[in-house]
Structures are given as C-alpha cells and as structure tokens.
Length: 69
Image (cartoon, rainbow, N blue to C red; front, side):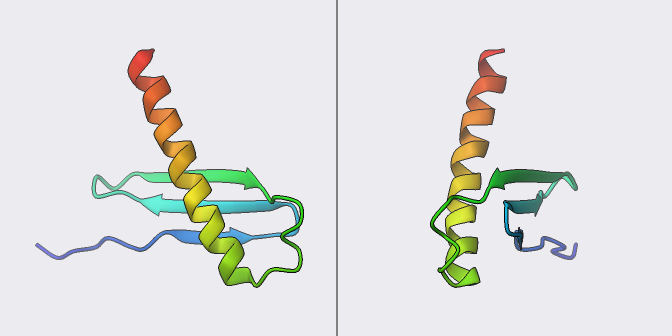
C-alpha cells in the first residue's frame, strides 16, 4: 500500500493562521487560530512554526475535551 500522507498545510494571512492536516484515516482536521499580535515583523516560516505548535496544543485540548464528553 502506498503512503499517501501529506505534511501539514499552513496558511498565513494578516489576521488568521490556519493549519490543516490529512490524517491516516483520510480525515482532514483544520485549526484556525488568530494570528498573534507582534508577529507582523517575523518571517512567514517562523509564524508557520509557531502556528504548528499552537495547533498541536489546540488539538490536544480538543482531544481531552472530546474524551471527557
């Protein structure tokens, strides 16, 4: 079987940072985060790295919430 996994996709706009991930189950999970203030002067790559970390934290919190529901 072929590995069809894709790396996370990061979209950066002036106000929103979006991170999309295609899971092994074929499900797309998207996290949209407000772009933190003060990041305007940072390179896009650094904003994207921070967005990935924020998305990981948000997904962990969502998984915890779903588990306790």
